Amino acid sequence: MVIDLVARDRFLLCSDGLSGYFEEDLDGLSRLLSNADQEAAVRDLVDAANARGGKDNITAVVVTVGDVATRDETRAKKLQLKREILARMPLFRPLNDREILRILQVTEVAAFKNGESVMQQGDKGEELFIVLTGKVKVMRGDAQLATLNPGDHVGEMALVRSQPRSATVVSDGSSELMMIRRRDFFEILRKEHQLAVKLLWQFLGVLADRLADTSRELGQAKEELLAEDITAELYEDDEDRETAILPPPPPSMRES
Image 1 (cartoon, rainbow, N blue to C red):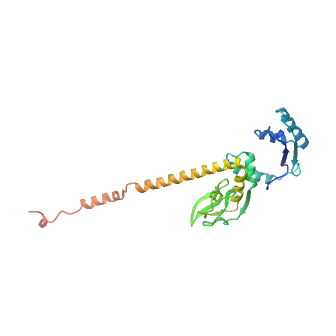
Image 2: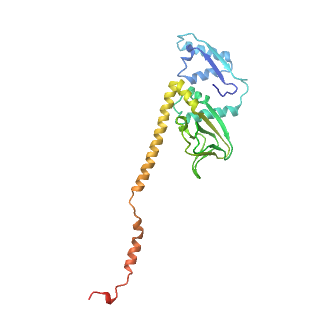
Image 3: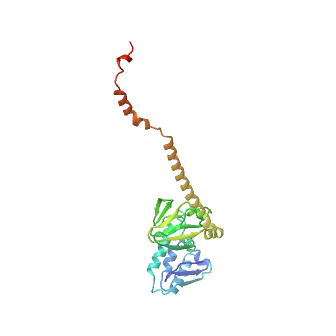
């Protein structure tokens, strides 16, 4: 398991005598953990658990990463951006903070130069790509289908099916993309059942929306094919005009 960290991040190791009182109050837990004094933070947590009932033994240890006086703000902002983008995606929108963190643990970031290929049409892939910074172009043949900006994603079907990519994706300028691989996605589904139910339910929703969009586009195309052909009306005036200016037949052809 890999977790991105910055200075002043903290780990709380505790028994359920403490955690049980904060499962639905993560904001309160974060507030008590923000005390710069680790020992004072532990005392505050134990006192809060006792005040809420104290029905079990309470044990807690707080571990702070690095020097609390220093912090890499650039790295911290990048980590926050990753969390925010994942939380906005339809696939991960219902997840709580703890579950978003679990997804982040299996998320890699790759940098691409201008014009560099992210994926090629026809290739088999196993990654979902999410634009973190910059933008990318989605191409099919020589036609550009779309431009994806931060928060947009492509290739989600690769998480559940092994099939050729339906389009090519190319970096438009410098960009960074988050990647989630199929094997890591499956590992979460196999081991974390509650999270798996949420992910699979959301995945069904994404597929249903895509099917609805496709059905709507096919319906519009069918209506266009069945529409009345009015091409002849374009030439009605010309035909009337030609008929109107035809000269009368010569006397020899008139009926006697």
